[in-house]
Image 1 (cartoon, rainbow, N blue to C red):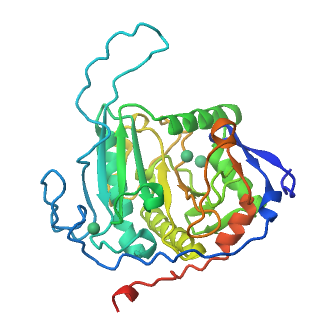
Image 2 (image 1 turned 180 degrees about the vertical axis):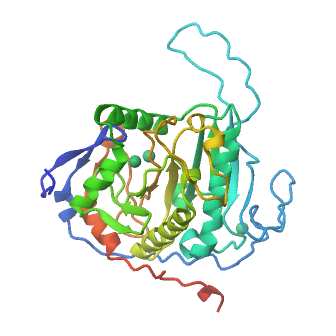
Image 3 (image 1 turned 90 degrees about the vertical axis):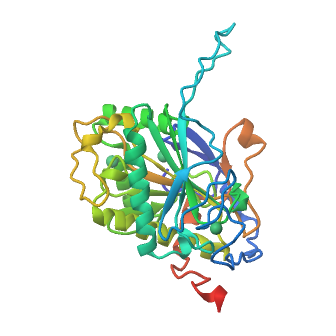
Length: 371
Ligand SMILES: [Zn+2]
Ligand SMILES: [Zn+2]
Ligand SMILES: [Zn+2]
């Protein structure tokens, strides 16, 4: 079962408890190797029309400070609001269920330079972003009504990103959203049944198999998961069992910055474009990690995970990129995938090999656009 030949099969995702259909014979259609329009990086370091650039005025009239590192603010057009919602009126049927939803949505600018992306930032520039994500997880999670902190980045117009300025979002919610809730259940069930962490076991299985690992550093492994749905989907996973960002040691935060740099560079080099994706971290719900066990930014973590709440949770990031064959040819989730189940053509093993073959030197080096 390990070495899947060219026959159609379906694979189990134990984290999400769902299936994906793999049709490798369809990938035997001639590979055009086409490279679409190269996406040249933004030419200007400061765009007067960008609402995220330092010193610019955002919609609503707030002026950004002249920040020179990371910068976060509450989203001016937040999907969730912190004020207690009005109780919804009694429904005439249990099938017409609703409940109030509270949350706090923030925007985090990674860098003041409008022309950059994570792929084209240095490790030293990405590390403060890791620290800011950690700080936000702690501060938002410390609010007693917040149960989950979802950190994510939508990269590229293809993923609906409205602004090329390097930035991400942090939506914290008074409930645990569906995806992390499902992963909580899977990890909890695996721990109860086997006494082991699901993702620690999975990392060991992938290391033994060897075929789907893209690269590793001392602290993180990047792999195309066995159950990948998107063509070049990657799971970035901490090698040590840690439940959440605040539990990462200082050198592990450096390791995360290094892994993000290397993965996004390989992505850009794959089709010589600014590779679009949605990425985000999955970590323990904040209700289960008391704040006195969390480690403030800059200190070394020394948190024992056993005995605390959510021992089942293993920190990781998902990268979901839409591109399939070139800088312009994307995968669509339509038809059978909307009505039946997800399906993929190229195998996760092939995708991992192609990402392994990519250079870690960016095809469009820093400074080139301004010379
Ligand atoms: Zn900007
Ligand atoms: Zn683990
Ligand atoms: Zn996850």
